[in-house]
Image 1 (cartoon, rainbow, N blue to C red):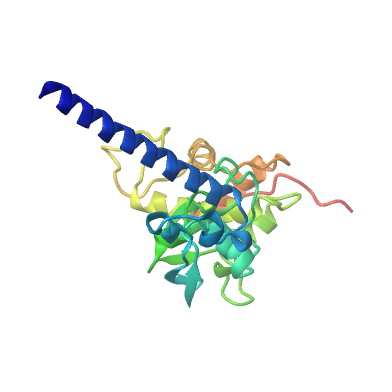
Image 2: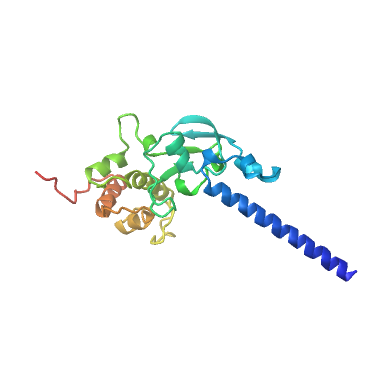
Length: 235
């Protein structure tokens, strides 16, 4: 009886292992094959796994405009914005969530769009750099970046500005950062020091090194007070 039970357990484990390896192979094949080239019939998947390639319905609001879409479950939000909707202000930098160039707002929270799947945000409200301005009227943060020359090549700028706008909302709510102090005395809106701004913007990399000007732009918008420029225009 004991031998039969042990044999049954081994068979169950064997089936589970084969099932796991099969799923892993399918997921790998899906991840490495271009979307346009993949068909469930080509991979000879059984019904349990072929659903992974079927397009799903997605209802999402982007910059105030509602979109009803069909997307593959593996499509990232970044690729949806850039490739499907042609909102190319959101940049693809490292594509690994390290540089912050792809930062957008999801329901008001800043997020690296390269690290999240579009299908996960059904019913969400997305704001990209294109949605911050009001027609020809720039967002105050955009104006401050221009005034303080908070960009050079400009590749990281859309992510920097989206992150900076979200940073101000976080400070208004009293959200703490690693360097915040005295929260028990002042749990409400935080006055941001340069150190606070640098810490809160640390997820956005500027390879040109425009950090002092970025800090000055954010400090001016947050404080509502004029901040002197750190540079002089030539000529």
